Image (cartoon, helix red, strand yellow):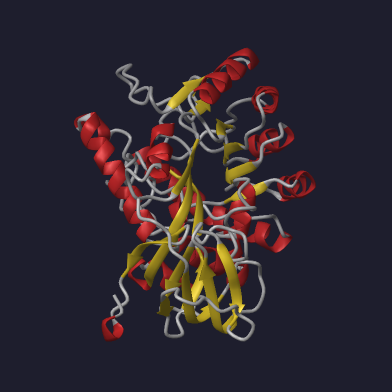
Length: 414
């Protein structure tokens, strides 16, 4: 891993992730520790004698984005079964490539909600691979026949490394303990069925409220971890929120009661609109999957739009793996299409996602003392946020001050 040196970035248009108005002619100063020393107007910026200066030429400078719902081990779309014909060692390299591509698309921190073990987090921390700073759920907790149970009609279960099955409160506690033992940063429970699972649908309930509460309590007994709930139908969303989860993932069928409950509990919504707006062609996924996605697409847009209007706290998440990797920032445009202000969408992918992951003291905004995770773009995200969907629009990516990507080309800048 390269060493961080003090550095000065000038002539930037700064959007710092706090919701404050952009600062034109801004300066960012990165210290030798990889933390931000200053982010603000050029007038008032401290001197940095001897530090290299990078002129950003008026480009927009933003915090590194955070995707709170990815599946790096899954090829898109719907690739759980495709992995059967690939050697485990090759899958490891494929996963590492997806992580690097996602980093280069502007995602400097991510939360993998099932499929990769804690070793990938450690590999990034040790500089063995390039990828987003990582939190991982390791496996998802589902009941038998639920969203996480991919037992085929032949009786073959294809995803034993992906799912922990739990059918009682005691099972839920036991599987939570195993996940904590195995290094999970977040526990993911299946509160409903889903689109991709063969045995159930979004309206089917998964783990009960009592089982979910047992998971939440078990994490509390061991120092605390966020609990994320795969929850699509309204009944399962209510069970998850009443059970004390930190976030509802998807939330496609949420009604007014769900929105009110989430507001009362301070529950985050991670709507993963990328799986709704990016509909796969018929025949490229199992027919049951395509039928469910088709039926729920309009319902989802209506309900997430209502959640935005109601002020439910939203964090960016794409469910990449179920949709293409390295196009994560498409999600920002989809949020705006459903009524969110562009600046609020940026906050969903920066400050809000950092809060959800318990990392708001380190990342999510460009403020002195936080890690220098940042991206630079030629686009103006406040007038054309959809432009960020193209990874080539992200011309520079840095983590803790270390430049991971730099494709600026004007006047030999690259």
